Image 1 (cartoon, rainbow, N blue to C red):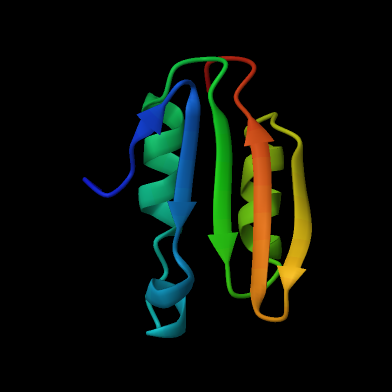
Image 2 (cartoon, rainbow, N blue to C red; image 1 turned 45 degrees about the vertical axis):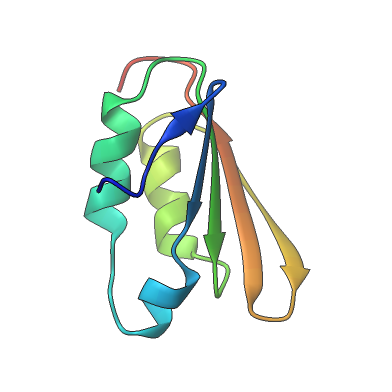
Length: 84
């Protein structure tokens, strides 16, 4: 998880290659979100819409927005407003 870092209250996580290799780093991301300070903006880059990850963010009380940047490149954005 050392590749996940926060700079200026923003965490940019690009997991496109890992997901395309068959990895599912969802648990790593959730643990990282839980340990991050309130006010952190998460920007997660995915090769698809990532609906299960969106649902997990919502279950933690966070709103998640997904935008398609280009084909096979989606960006999920969410802000941690409360401790989870």
